[in-house]
Image (cartoon, rainbow, N blue to C red; front, side):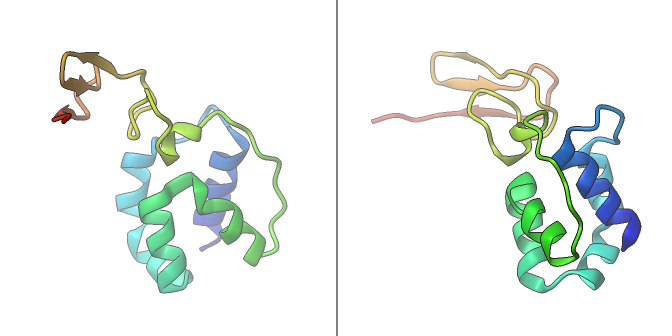
Length: 107
């Protein structure tokens, strides 16, 4: 679990040389499920960067927060998977890197 905590610390501190979240998380699911409480794991899976400070604090790991990866938590106007600014036209929103494309119905 130490390897996973080191990665989470790197994310929250904004280390530029880390593996992407979408590649790292699926490879580490088993270790995360074994080392975290069910609630911590689900928060990390769904809220991503918003859950990291609580997890690191529980394990007594100090950190300095950076805003580099805030998009992992769902920052408006940015892809939640790759951090690229999203594009929109009419009622469509998409990631230029192909991560997602949605049609928004507004009433």
